[in-house]
Length: 431
Image (cartoon, rainbow, N blue to C red; front, side, top):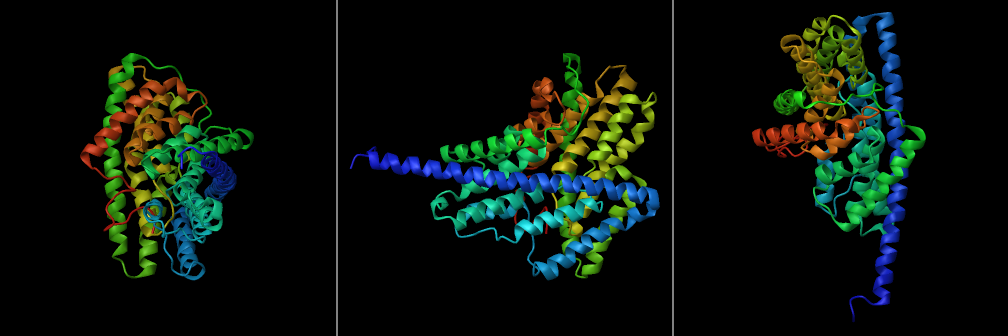
């Protein structure tokens, strides 16, 4: 029979129509999930943070412990001791057609991610959103016969939609899937993820188009290029510190047999750090905005130097302790925030020591893209995610791309694994 007969063309057309339909359906569900988790977490995080400051800042010490202890009991009694392993679970599912993400991972990751962050656990809800979305895609594949040929496509479509809504970047969502999740491309994968990110982007445009940073960036000058490269190198080194400290924390806490000690050693240590440095609380996006405003309005920038140095080293430590103690989350928010703090520090020090006129906000974005790219080994996804953090971030697309590529190349040369692909003998990011 001729390979291109009308009946064969009809089968192919129907398959693509089915793929498009289910990609749209998955995208809508995951967009709503991501939107609700993002804004509910943001609202309650700010509410609890303000209440603690008003009542007694000493409460910061115990708040992360409350959240992670609640997660421990939910995991034990509601989810029957079934553990979450983050994005590594998606890799396992994609690598084995008979392996699936069970439905409980949707409420498990959403609830656990929400509780971790609103009580001050120093991570973000991005990985919680990604795995919950991947589960929606996997369940759609399982429950619909006409979707049975598209397991990878539907899981990736779900992940792409979630990332698109979290950061308002369709290209960021698409490229994250291609660089980090699927690590390959095909016609059906591009169709499913393209349709999904387009659907999610329409959703974002209608309901959630406000960028993280409201201040517009300024154009850059070639004289800043050496400092951008130095920042990219420092970010690559910092990402290695972050990756190693997360791995060490997971390994250390896994050896503590007493559940009470395992939860509270890490959580209370995080609480102590938050008590002395409030910017570490939760995803720290509020702390980044505060530091940026101070750097742009304060006449004396030197007062920010020591807090920035502490934040650059303690934010990754707090994130590692949160994850080691049993919190749910990942490295997106910590990488973006730590990199931005590093960029602000480099700009302020350069301006003070060398009389340069580096633009602080621009360098915050250069640091964010470098650190994120180096941490997840996804330079193009990091580029478009960070471009959407500010209203006109694409003005900086050339130096952002350069910083992203340099940082990722250095990080991968120093250490071939990222926080998602580290060998199975020491699982990382969620437990």
